Length: 195
Image 1 (cartoon, rainbow, N blue to C red):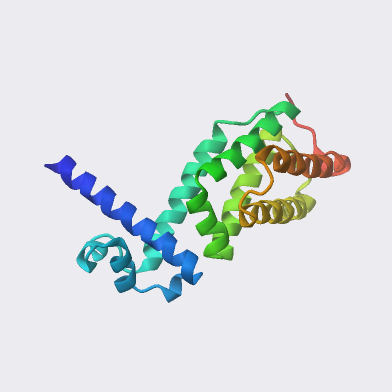
Image 2: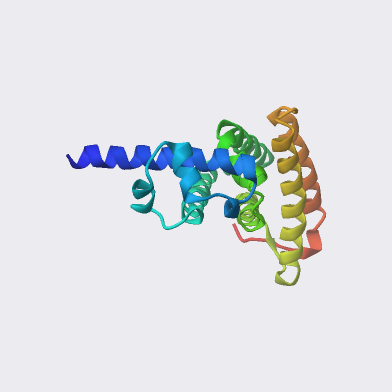
């Protein structure tokens, strides 16, 4: 009996998340989405919604937290400190984004939530830099991260918007070349780690 309820809950939440993503694509702003239209789109009654959430923002927050956690898990599995490993890291991440297009497009392009976009890309870039095992002088670290974060975010968002008009390998090579070049030329601002 409990398993049946858990399956029903998972299915209801999935239907609500899909409805939310569709509405965000249409409206572009969570504040323009009502519980009524969300439930109509999901073909669920409002009592089902209110059993799990207070407002559509709660559902969006849950979706954002889930994608942050699953992305972090994905990124933890990849890394290596040599060039081949770093290239593999970026390529795998881009493929992961493409495989999960609807949620990434919704959260990074359609919903246009700058706070989530920043959190997501910051988490990703920090994991990438950790995998390269580079430590920066603390006085410049925030500037290096900001530079890499802004540029990488711009490329990835443009790639999503273009409908993946360029293959992952090309985008991967571009991101790798730009970021690696920037990081390698920061010699006096990096701290050598003891092996």
